[in-house]
Image (tube, rainbow, N blue to C red):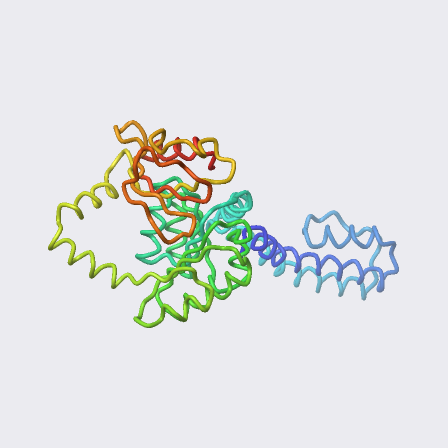
Length: 338
């Protein structure tokens, strides 16, 4: 439930009984006493407010009986209304609703962001990596405590079902660049992929694979890639044993405090300023720029690892580069990529 809707719903629950009493009182005086509409409304207001201004016009016996009933019922209605409104403000519900409204406003301005479905261990690791590398991200989880905890840390987090169309729309899926299915179950991630693919056909979807043999189902459901954390964990454990220095280097690069170094891809788009120029102009072999480790060919399958500086850049290729966030940003800028 978004902030605007919740505020309206809570206020409607407070104001509707009061409005009903006002309408009933006005109609009652009109029917019983035959007073003008405004006089009937005025008498209803001063009666419910118990201000003791006196009768607008002399009341008949039936009118006084109606007034007694209006006072008795009205006191109960007004007490309920004011207590509900006070609780809404004092208990922090209003602040929470306003915070959600501000968050929805921020999400509505996002474009090219990422959506993480699931705030468990895997989801939070994804979230941390995206934040470290300067990406905008919205996280969705069904646990209100998880959402509140992340929201208190400044994360754009939504409480809801990630398999629901409206929840994904609230996260801005129409403008998103990619989505991560990080729910704890394979069926959940399958439904997320189906729903997300139906809402945006060109969205890149990466899903978590819990059980072996589910990869095909996830891809048929709409996921571009299925990642098995168990498989990756096993490979990592084996690597720690047989190539600890290489693993230690990558681990220190990922976990280093302060300056963030990453291996990322930079596409060579049509019309890029350096097309046809030798790779040495951007390769950064002396540490002053991002280091180009490989070039993926136009076919998207073959790689030229440690390419020669004389290799000419061609449109449709993708550079696999390593460097700090600033160096990678500069490389993208030189190649005309945002």
